[in-house]
Image 1 (tube, rainbow, N blue to C red):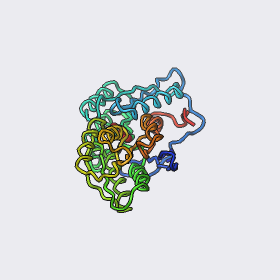
Image 2: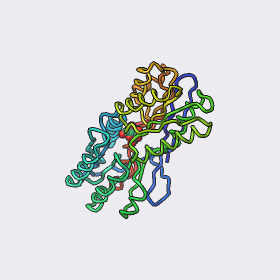
Image 3: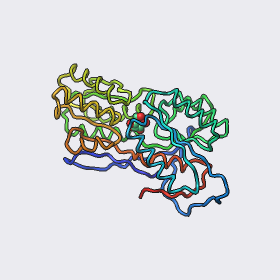
Image 4: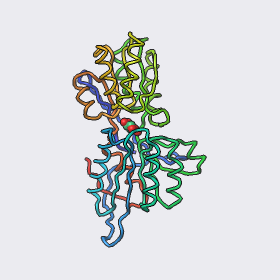
Length: 319
Ligand code: ALL
């Protein structure tokens, strides 16, 4: 697959990392191109257009509002080919609301569901119900758990980035500013999210590679306030702490505030993941050292293009 993510850093040194976008079947192993293609096949206007439902996580997180905007743009560029229904949940942990959304989309008889699951295990069975009802399911962003997919006997294609590699690159960027045995902390996402687990592993890879000391690893559940509380406690418990790596930028915002409240700006370096707009500003002024950009605006579009009810060859509204 083809689209790329970037690592962004402040202007002390700038480099771009090409994160791979992976598309694979649960049991399988193929990489598929989901990039721009040619000659759209136009569906005759009297035919019923496929209805695609995008089901995301917390719309309070800019990552998902950007994803929604990108998906709507993609639909406008392919308006003759499909209709889009955009759904999200209120907070990161509201699994039952996300399950309800899947049920509602089954009842609505949509043709395909493109889902960024809030949990890698809990949403599999409702997606299986959707498939049994004849709905195509495409998994984006946060991959479903392979063991649960196998236990349920379903194969669901996944489209998303290499989270471990992205996090490793963010960790390496931070590590360049630290010396051996410096104390660092990791703030994880929701522990049952596969992409959160991968990011934690990527941060650990980078820290271990240069012998930095991970003194604390705790979950901020993807949320700013929770990460703020967790970071405040870690900072006071570890006065020698040098850096905090965050599995997403919402949490990095909370950590930057905790660092400021402890008068440690500059002493505690911060890394994030997503490159949301508030973080771009902090990267410019050095409050955050690095973040990974996984192009939220394009991710849903690539998932939609992978949905079999649609003809191949859609217009991609981004260059
Ligand atoms: C992940 C996304 C984003 C986001 C996080 C919080 O699945 O990749 O990093 O910030 O969910 O919901």
